[in-house]
Amino acid sequence: MLRLENLNKYYPPTGEVGAGAMPAPALTDVSLDIAQGEFFTLLGPSGCGKTTTLQCIAGLEHPGTGRITMGDRVVFDSDPGILVPPNKRGLGMVFQSYAIWPHMTVYENVAFPLQHGPRKLPSSTVRTKVQAALERVMLQDYVDRPAPYLSGGQQQRVALARALVSEPSIILLDEPLSNLDAKLRDAMRVELRDLVKALGITTIYVTHDQTEALSMSDRIALMNKGRVVQLGTPEDLYLRPKSAFVAEFVGRSNIIQGKVEQVGVDGRGVVNTAFGPLSCPLPATAQQGQTAELMVRPHGVEILPAGAEAKGANVFAATVGRTSFLGEFFDIELVSADGAIVRVFGSPYQRHETGTAVAFRLPEDRCLVLACRS
Ligand SMILES: Nc1ncnc2c1ncn2[C@@H]1O[C@H](COP(=O)(O)OP(=O)(O)O)[C@@H](O)[C@H]1O
Ligand SMILES: [Mg+2]
Image 1 (cartoon, helix red, strand yellow):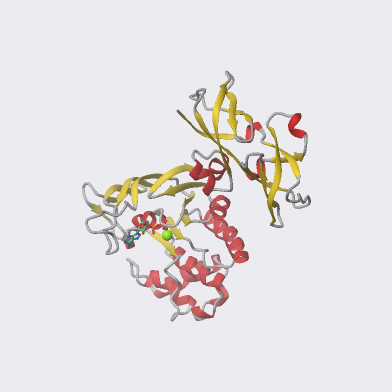
Image 2 (cartoon, rainbow, N blue to C red):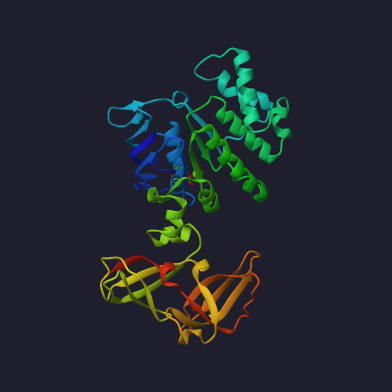
């Protein structure tokens, strides 16, 4: 449906950059294939290239090289030099910086793209379409309200109605919920996803918020420094991160360094860590003596009574360090004899006092080896 092939983009150097120095590329070889009706998210830290990617899709920025195809129509190609302007790409957009127009009513805001679009529509058609778009976002009773007299959530819904009114096949959303308070953001997440799914619109959603990305997306492309570093379903990214960057950006994680002690024939082995020898699955290529980097989620660690380390596999002694109560769980640091720390999310119903001796278990199947290096 929407295909990006090897997009590369440099922004011209700004005044701040030292004389002659080229800034780092904003996009490097970004390739994505997005299916019809998919809710697809670009996730990543600030400055990683999410907005740039979206603006290249919109036609508001142009890649230095690469090709963008929508359906079977090439809208950008650096090689034969194809460039379809933004208003001919059939897109709806809600950009963080494109607030709704404060000097217009709800009706005028939503009607704007139809009145200034590529085709001139009769005013009765405009009225019908605006009415339908406002009904979709449940704002049909606010038609004549001046835009400033709306709550933040309502303004966001106006922006959405304006993006949907031309019945686009693709909608681009750049951090559309980031200016809302936490409660409203939760509600709008569900509302927004239900709406675009019900309409069957292909959605490209940009956010730096992993909760939004995990809860809304069919697939996520996690970006870092202008590159896509992992592409997959929310579960792929959370449960099967391919690097420490992914593990740490999506959810919380303990990254544990160790040395491969033993490689079994069954895809398992033993890694020596600061806590002690740890049995875990190993990649087929792992070799004895290599440095291993492992990941365990704080939810995956079990706290046991002191002394349990003498009995089970992957059970280690520790002392309770800093703890904080977060309502839904206790965030607890466990400290080994030589100072290594593992973070655990424990039950809110069970307090562990700082300084007490405990044991903890790293269940074998929750230990994920991210890399083994010689
Ligand atoms: N108009 C611009 N001129 C120069 N550099 C820019 C411009 N827009 C973005 N950049 C740079 O490109 C990189 C990617 O930015 P952006 O796509 O906005 O990231 P994100 O949306 O993920 O925060 C950043 O290093 C940013 O500073
Ligand atoms: Mg951005």
